[in-house]
Every structure is written in C-alpha cells, then in structure tokens.
Length: 117
Length: 211
Image (cartoon, rainbow over all chains, first blue to last red; front, side, top):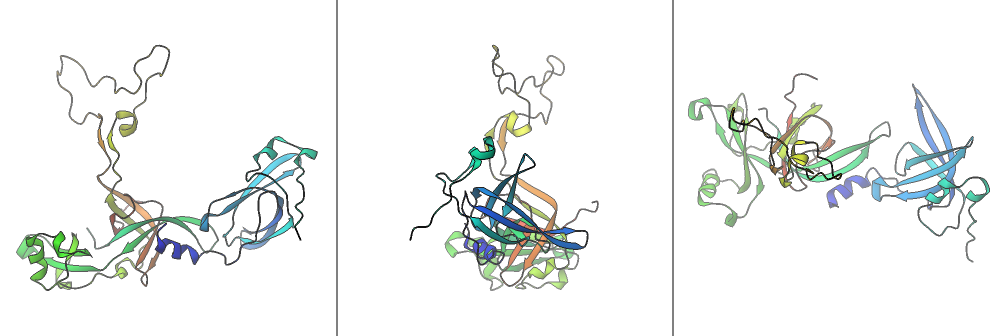
C-alpha cells in the first residue's frame, strides 16, 4: 500500500478499536438517521467473521431473530458506530464460523473462553 | 479544453463523509506543474499553454527537449502537455499551475491511459456471446460470421474482431470531486479512474453540459 494513502486513511480511522474476535458475543450501537432525528440502535449477536485491514476492517455479526437468521456487516472504523461492547468471549477453533448458519437452537451454543491466570 | 491539473494515480481507498457513509475514492498526487510555453493565435494558430510536470534527469531527455527547457531556464520535465485556454496572455513561462483551478468544482472529467489487456478475443473485447461448450459443439469462443459472401465480397470497415485491448486513451466524465488537499497536493475523486497505479491522469472541470 502506498504510504501517502496509509497516512490519509489514518486520519479517518478510530484511535482505539475494541479487541473482539470470532465467537465473541457483542452489542453494536449504531447511529441511525431518520429524517432529521438521530438515534442509536443496538444489534446484539455473535461475531462469525472478521474481514479486511486498515480502514476497511469489518465484522459480521449474526443473530437469530424470530426464527430468522440475521447477519449484519459493520465497518469497524465507521463514525456511524458509536461503540461495540463485549458481552462474552467465545472459545472457538476456527476464524470463520459459517457452520453456525446450518445449525439452530442448542447446537449454536459456543463455549465460553476462560482467561488463563 | 479547459485548464486542469495532471497527477499520478496512487491507488484507491475509502473515506467517510459527514453522514458517516463510506465513499470509495481514488487518490491522485499532483506534482509541480509549470508553464513551459505559451501559444497564441498569432504565433501558432491557436491559443494554448504547454505545461510540464514530473522532473526528469538530463540523461532521460533528448537534446531537443533539453534545449526547449534551457531556453527559458526551466527545470527538466518528463511529461509535456497542452491545455487550450481563452487568454494565453494571462500566463507566463515559468508560472505554476496551482490546485486552486479545481476550486468550486463539483464534477470533473478524468483522462488517462487504460490498463493494457493484450491481444484479446471477441468475447472479452466486444462482449460477444460464446457458443455451447459441450454436446459436440466445437464453436466455443469463435467470432462467428464476419459478413456476407460474394456481395459485398469484403469485410465491412469497423467490424468488431479480436485484437489489442486496453492501453488506449480513455476519458471518464462527471466524476464527483470529493476533496482537494492543497497542502499535501492530493486530489480525491469518487470512484475509479482509467489506468494502473503510477500512471499520469489529467483532471479537468467537467465539460459535459447535460446531466
């Protein structure tokens, strides 16, 4: 990547990103503009994918809402994202959790990660 | 042709606008642009200025080119280009063309040399359909018939056939100018522009009248 473009991207990037990984359960607070009003909407689910680097870094969050699987892709550096809170760390053995799409109910549970002391 | 700037395409990235939406942009770095010759109706038959950009070493230029720069005590430039202007008397040899020519400009036309694709067949070059790949067919990516027989007993001019694709001058019109950074000499244009990274492109305020 060109160093000038790198520098340009840095001016648009968030200083600190939350340390989240696939398998984690997170709550993403997104700013939504409706007409003139602005409000915050939360989206809670499991991260099934991390993608990209730099300003193009995204996470895909999946949840099951009324029996329908919903996946949303969030640009981590977007000013539309107010904050991302970590609810639970998951212990998973792969980086892309696409297998969750074929499962439902109890089978979608993810073991909690216990930090080593 | 109106006056514009010449710059090097650095590559693409994305930035966020005031609404927080991600916009794909091409980053173009503009080097010093210096007027090297002023052409008028009296002397040359048309009004234009010749500008030079990208400084060059002496060994990369011919004696004729070196003489052209030496005559006016200018630096050596690798790239020379003309812009048609209405009043050539406004410009002097040695003047710099600033990025301010893009002030208050919303949309621009970008001209560059497209990426070369080499010798390509009709399917890629002209979007011809292809034949069946199986069922005994041997007509996979052939161009098909190129015209009638005895009458006119020749192939009409301009018939789309295989040949060299890309590496030609391309202009994309009405691209949105996202940002001009005069301090860092950067121009950000929404979307893609012709050519590969490192090639020079010309940016002028759009000449298209219709929307």
